[in-house]
Length: 208
Ligand SMILES: Nc1nc2c(ncn2[C@@H]2O[C@H](COP(=O)(O)OP(=O)(O)OP(=O)(O)O)[C@@H](O)[C@H]2O)c(=O)[nH]1
Ligand SMILES: [Mg+2]
Image 1: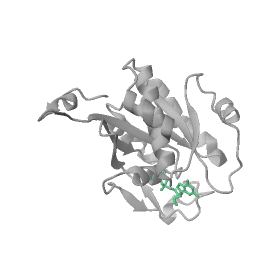
Image 2: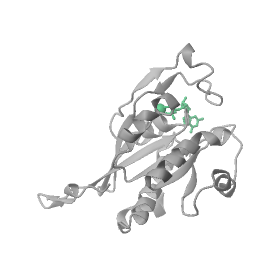
Image 3: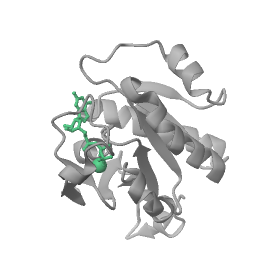
Image 4: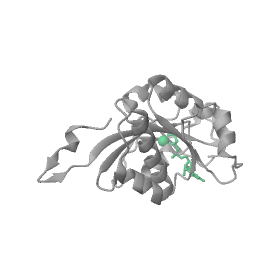
């Protein structure tokens, strides 16, 4: 949520508004990568090695070189136009760690659901989760090399999303691309929650 205390002025300067954002999606879709790409501080990670025990449980097709997985959460921070500080919380993707989601998502303004078109159904649990919680979200399709390209309309239809859920393409390894996703999410979430449109971010959205 938008934190009221953070709006207070300090020495005549306005403090940036603090906003909590969740980065969710299926196993290996690029959540940790996205948090790491945008974070202006050293991101906090809780990565553990994928072991032989995960063979047959975790589907690494498409990300065969993946050696680690998030077991609790990712955490990072990005400031936008000195007006907003986004605190980013990445969820663990593996089903056995989904019990963490309530903790990670508590108090979030909105969520990014990352999707991979090669394993689109893996993002359904995240979509269902945020729909059930009433948390505004956008779907960002992380475009892996070699994955077939789809039109956004095709993806929207496949996900059976409500008409107002923004869907966009992104590259979780690129700062500008991740920033564009985050700005669109904040604008969408503020609109859904009736918080008014932040001029600074709208201007940034036009540039991104
Ligand atoms: N080609 C390509 N590779 C990517 C991209 N994003 C992430 N990767 C790679 O894909 C793998 C998965 O990335 P992670 O960021 O660990 O995925 P995750 O969603 O955090 O995974 P879990 O926490 O295990 O669910 C890593 O090997 C990344 O280097 C991308 O946009 N393009
Ligand atoms: Mg991760």
